[in-house]
Image (cartoon, rainbow, N blue to C red):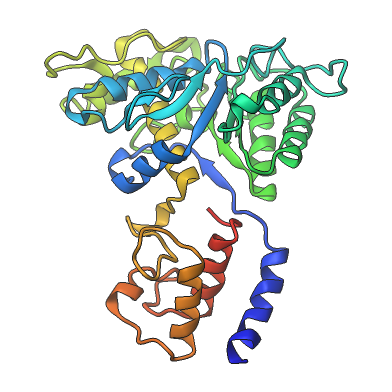
Length: 365
């Protein structure tokens, strides 16, 4: 009776809850912060189809650099299409064939009353042989001048039609406009939509707008090769690498001092000077961060999964029941339980119970 009384308001609250936005930006590039468990979980659970043209390939070039870096071994292994490589993330590059190769070239309404990239995505997901695909990504070539509301509306069409698939929104790269230009306004519109709707955003623009120390360049203005200031006078990738020789990120970018590794090469539109390839490295690192989040990692948890009351590596209905038992005094609170505290007060209370019910119901990442 007591348990039913406590559960009732939470069941009602869950029905009204919405998913929390996952925003992947320049603060999401620190590989050492991602627990290995969640990297492994991403490899086990996620099957990604990604469609893009040249700018969108920056993510893949960065992923390749991480895969090739000697000291990482197979930690950041990924497999294009087949999914046959043990312990590798399954990401089908150029995986959504159709009339539009990217969002920019697909900014029109086709004979189905939607954008051609929506039609291509439907064709992919409606094919029974692709039933395993659970993440869809499309990127822009140039976002400049395109119909952003059309983009947002058509993404929402897909989200409504395929509730079991994660759809990743993206912003567009820098083109020297600076703040106040169309691109900045368009990117802000996408960011606000994702925050308001609780969507997943890979903030392509934000990642290139900041160097790894958090210095901001888009207002100076800057371009997609990390040049900034009028006349392309400076390059923040070159400057940052020169000031951080020997760091892991500098070595990932240049290959300096790493036997058998030549650095990140061929970053589309950001390949000269060599140090500008840091653009791709950061985006590759951010992609792993995003995949770990989609697999269930909460980045605020310092390696512990909030809501995992019983310590089995996941937050599910068993944890919800345990949290309730602790709350009503039927179970003794231990230090192991406290590690899964959500609000930092060292206790398992109403907030933890509500949180873990959301996790168990799939309403929170």
